[in-house]
Length: 328
Image (cartoon, rainbow, N blue to C red):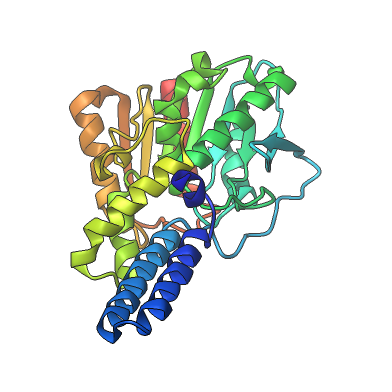
């Protein structure tokens, strides 16, 4: 019952508010001190519910959708929502790359990266994440639920357009797209095309939620003493929203390598400096892969690459082009 309520927006805060105010009003005719305690407790519990809900907010604004006659657009029904994919078939025997955009971005913003792969002879798939582009929003946004919906969308494409999956497959993730790429690697057996996964490209990736949780707490001005409570509530919220996947037990479960890591040749391209995520995400993936599989990782720092707004970047394109030629 409680998990069902956690999946909905505003319900738990409203229950806390009305229950608390009712108790406050009833007790006011009995004992003013008790009434005051009920009021303060209500406000405190309401605050906790509200800041927890805000941690699962979807993007407020969307980038313009991709409308290009060169791309085939497909609307998929996924878990009661519409997910939109775009694909370009260069050659039915060519390899394919799936490009996953970042937070508040969309497939339209990935066209420059896609063009590089088309020039290299690749088929390309792009998917608007929930709440981005033309894909419908979900009630409370999590990277896990978005990963689940991306997996379902890719599997639907596999069934309806098998010519996209006749050769090897790369996955390219930018920022939040890199975080989802890590999860796709972890959950690869759920992908119908997992046997052709051949490599990963990740650009200025998010590799853990620990820093994002701290950033959110700072943004919402949550006092340090309350952050462990908010974290516990957030974990319960996350588990309620993703009941089909294993429960989280701690923040470490949403950091690489527990969240996921790469098991095939990987190109890590990093904006230096990264004005959005800093260095911690880059260093985490670097450390994990250097410890477990150093031969699989190629890392490149680009001092003229910005985290955001780099829809076209010649230096990044050349790095990718050379890596593809060397690896494949």
